[in-house]
Length: 311
Image (cartoon, rainbow, N blue to C red; front, side, top):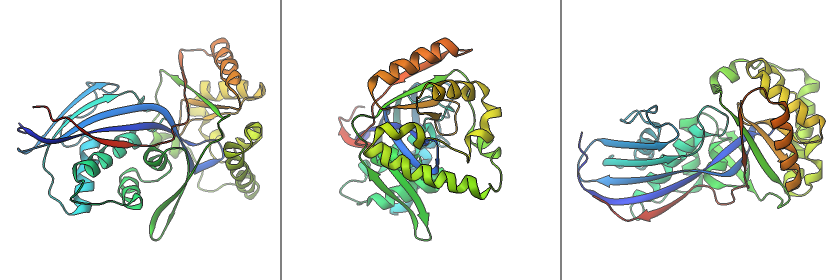
């Protein structure tokens, strides 16, 4: 369906994210300097036109079922404003199905696009943006860092989701290794037990607290702080090469963890030299192709700016 001429456009930029970070299951998330970009135009007509370039081209839906479109629609509903015609031009770089928050990025792209298109008509608070995004994603651990950047601690109360954003120590040097294989979040979650031993829960509480301190103040503690007993070992059978590489890296003193639900792995180096060592060890021990992404911590989170209208 044609959407007619554009009346306003916005440019949205959203970072990749890595959740859990080892012990911080469903709570801690980190924004990374790898981005999806999207130009969204409100048009005078009706309907939706979606064009995807880069990751997901030819694979993701290009109609109203597209996740970005659904997120825009949900944000307009929350604002009580009818959905206009829309035209989307996406340039995606975040890998899909690999534990780097691609679905969270799509959701946050839609929420931020709606925020930008509704500027001067509707004002959204950060908590409102987080609430809409969390309702779509199901949990806030990826959408919080995608929205706000940095290291985020996310939690949910009866009043809805909340977050605390923290600045990461400048010595922390992330590197992500991305495999060719994918893993669905739902499959990864299905491998979790309904309950865990008390000593394992206590172990993770201590490591999660230590991890916050390591990331914001004491990077030399990252190896001990990224130990986990709640989720990674249970999911190892679904991503054996990831598990093997994490063991190799940790034995070499590197803070390696599963990125999100996997199968990508994240190394939180305490200095840039550790990233080079990690890349060398992965190259020497991997059984298949893994793409290294030498990244920084994204400090801004998602951004939205006016974009020249093109018809």
